[in-house]
Amino acid sequence: MSQPPYRFPSLVADCHTLLLRLAGRVPDGLIAEARDRLVAEDLRGLAASMAMAVVERDVSLTGPDADLLTGLLNSAGADHARLSRVRRQSGDPAPEWEFAPAPLPVLRAHRERIGRCLDLTDAGDLALADGLLDERDLALIGLVADRPGVLALWRAWRFPPSGPPGPRAKRVYLAEVAAGTDPSLLALGAQIALSEQGEADPQVEVYTAASSPPAYQRAARARSSLLWAPVPPHSFHRASVYDAVDGEAGPRFHTDHPLVTDPARRDRLLDYLTSAATIRDNPILRDDAVNRSRRSVVPWSVRTDGVWIWSEAVAYYLREHALAPSADFLAHLGDAGNRPPSLDTVSWFRARAALYRTT
Image 1 (spheres, rainbow, N blue to C red):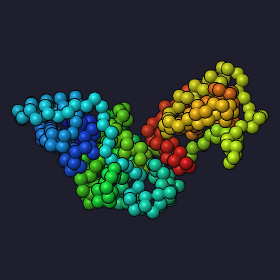
Image 2 (image 1 turned 135 degrees about the vertical axis):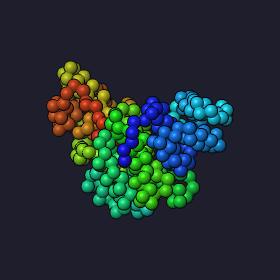
Image 3 (image 1 turned 45 degrees about the vertical axis):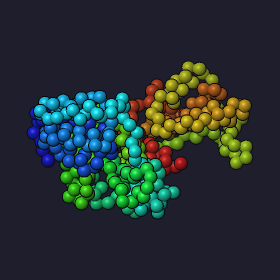
Image 4 (image 1 turned 120 degrees about the vertical axis):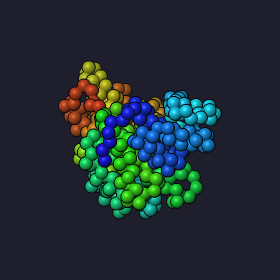
């Protein structure tokens, strides 16, 4: 579907961001309807429906979003006094939903095999269970694959945090687009495609790569399945931390474990290891396997440079005890530059999927 240039492109962009922040907080049908109004530039109708929804449901708004709705209603000569009762918030509230990368029947049948997120562009993940993709997923994959500027497509299943999840389970799609691609038009086109497949009140969250999406979309993406990306998947290498792990004595290093004694080289390696993208935050600190008197000091978050995945413990033992990373990982670090590359969202997500595939 094509769309002539908007009369008020800045307002359309602001309203698109508003709808991203209200998704999951006002009824799905209102969000879907508002995205239709947005592409038609019925901004008054959009503002009126969203204002009524937030007032009736006591939904808080950021200052800019409240000002946007007030301004749109005021410019249309509509009553906006009710918005004065809306609570203001400084940031995105935590979403009141749980998300999963697979539908409920698949989770119930194969919970032990389904990680926190899946890369369904990878044959290994796709083969984990039947029912990971269906006709609605395939319809949307076909849509975005033909659209220039689309960088990735995910799908999460949304569940209420309590109560029976079945009747209220809802699929949520997320698409990342390049700068210059109209996210509102893509969202509407995807809604139409899903409606034709029988999806009621389709939920399609589209954001640009240059901006971080709100908390609701980030939470959904973190527990989603990657359905499509223009770049095919690749394997990741996992860096080991210890030389051996004994069931009784615990982890240990061999007495002849190689050391990095050159301070300049050690600093360069540490800079690389500690500045790569984090794919798993882990607040738990483990005991030092070299100096057993040091308790709860070893960090265990996980990072990646898009090729290798490693625990922050690798950097800890290098810094505190000059213990070199494993030989194959050290060879990779020697060939790498001084700083790890910046990762796009797809590479970052695929590294997370690889991590949870093996943990």
